[in-house]
Length: 280
Length: 155
Image (cartoon, chains in turn green, cyan):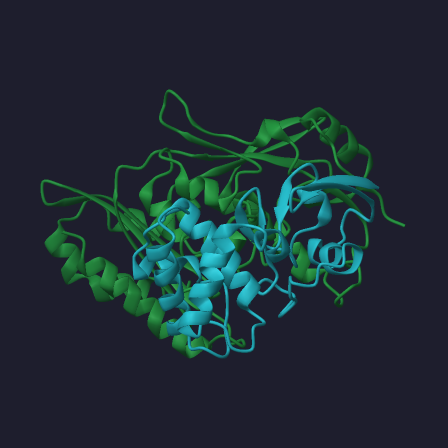
């Protein structure tokens, strides 16, 4: 028998987590698929479950005095899409995740914690250098999303910790985003690319590049980005092939039921070329 | 666990496992079989119900997540005059053939027209993008939503 915990307050939730190893259940759109057995049967959970959707304390979207966006742990995609506080580029990404029905249930934090290499929301979070806030009875810590996700389904979370918030710093950039999938809606990404840049006086002041679905986690290489920051846009365009080659060792997709590694590699590089041509 | 919620404007309290799918509660506990199970993994939308007026997939929703909330199924919508307008439009335009996707399609149409009484074709397609139909090729459904939108200004 497993225990079902339905705390009403964050304190109650953290008390439970300090004593029980639980699945943390938010919208459930991933867990209910992963644990589903058959019509009419209960989902096959093998350990206790802590349901968080009643934690009203985690239901908020707000901006602080430094313009950091704070997204509460149970914020659903539909709420983020409708919020005037959320940057448009995030909305562009969210509107291509799953379907309207699923976005009415699924949470951003759930998408992060699921740590799928094809998790679309993780791409802009990496680009913006967003962090997650983890709370436990022992205290609070903040971890960059890029570090929090360690690999396929692997996250930097202790059993007594709950992700209570996502913090997105502001970014004054122009953006590029393309998701390649089989359909317009309800499609799991084959490969995606988000670029962000800032040009001042003909020079590249900020350059950020994130690939989704081409490795065990989102690829964002700070070293390559830095190397090509500060040069003129003309030089950047002249060196597009060099930049693409820099990512040779980073683009390591797999072949699965959705696509092949060859296709993904070619498309990832083409997307990068398409983005870099737009940096003016 | 005792869980209370509202189904089609009636308050119910059930003693069920909190992880039980809302879909199974609706069909097997409440015997409301208008809600269909297609894929069982959130792809097809046949199990769509409205929770607080928003379409969700009942196959992915554990019953605990609708505790103290309003749930509406096609049986509840059938009691409204909006249903008549939408159902007539689907019949008129051939928007329903085998009928398996129809309860979900109609619930999403209702939710869309409540929010946006005169949607563009793009908005209609977008709203219905989580509901699959293997019979109609979709155009008849899109046309039906347009007809419902024209007739149902009062929606």
